[in-house]
Length: 297
Image (cartoon, rainbow, N blue to C red):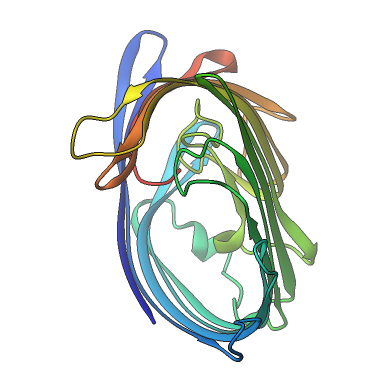
């Protein structure tokens, strides 16, 4: 049995040229409960029931301008069964009951123009993790895939992600790639893929690019420059990442088409509140963002 609560906060400064133009504060809070029950002494088979409620601020952009700010409430219940793949990970399948409520704070009411679809559906998930640490891993790999088929929403959503890290002396090299898109129909606005934010096209605002057929990849190099002070834990790292992303079917007007590159430079380490980063990203056309980030990217 697990009970989880969390709070995520990011301070983002949007830079234009050499002048600070705007500031944004993004946060997400949630509460979840999970009941995991093995069906054998070897824990080979299991059933799982999970419920979660999350509230976050979601921005929507058009032509690099924020046109709407919503307060989005996401509630879901998952009932699944699965099999543990020994030390590799697990596969699970089941049903999800989900509701998304979008409350307009400021700007254009996008959801009045594009009504959201139903999110109940069949789940299939694969998760494998061979990383040696939860945060700031030094070696290993991880793979994750989630598929949701929503019969009443007339769409199916697939999300896949691959990660890997390897050490070389006092350096750690890593890579990550991901894809989100519809395998049937078209993704509703609330379930669309997003790009923008720290190590997700760092040069751009959180969730600035939204749509279907969304791909992202980065390679990074991190130098271990020390250990965190007494009472904390983990490495302190100075890193750089080369990023690229593409939105195949954008849902809002974009100034940039095709593959969008970004360069990120950051300093990070683990704190009692989770991983923390301070960094800056630079993209084409002068797009620049600076971050102070606490939580998982």
